[in-house]
Image 1 (cartoon, rainbow, N blue to C red):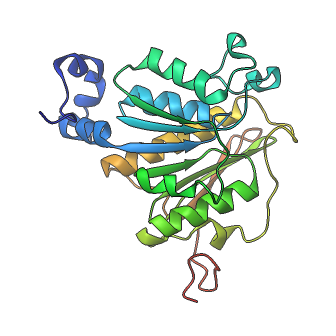
Image 2 (image 1 turned 90 degrees about the vertical axis):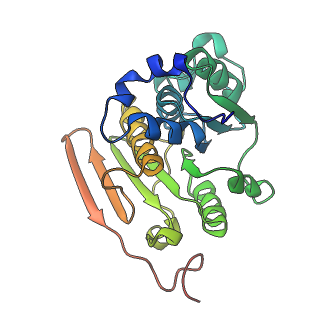
Length: 249
């Protein structure tokens, strides 16, 4: 029996997807067959994990070495006060199984590094939900090497960004665009609490569209959002021929 065939119980759960012309039953089965690695279980990882699990993505990998602290709760909505002091991947996995027990979860309580970057090869799509330039450059290198799309998101104060980096799909890689460290987000700087919810949801949206093969994606484009002005801007990106990661040299 094909494990990716939708069961009668799942037909009811995903009914609002199944009646969409762009998804229907075949699309929902593609979601069930898909695997996504989310690196970072913080502000961006929270909406990504919640919405991808709710949508029926069949296999999610969760990677993060940190524990839940009180300062996380202002924006990292997958965690609760009861999870303080617990590994973020354990807290997130428990919440996701409460949300959708059909989703298979693998947890990795570790920081992404050159020693464990081969994990990228085990998943269809990689979501960068980290908060620093060093992690992103490592993730980008692994995604380029293993020909995996990297769904990028970042938040800073009241501003957010989202894109898909994938040289094997004729789009730039992360380092084509960010050759020098931009402002890092995370604990060291202030972040408007609801901002990661919007940017993380954009990442989840782009991930679902990639799996389903629908709509116009952010491949080769960078979406920029400002929460104070309520403005969206989308700019076209170009590959850097001299990029040390994906360039022709």
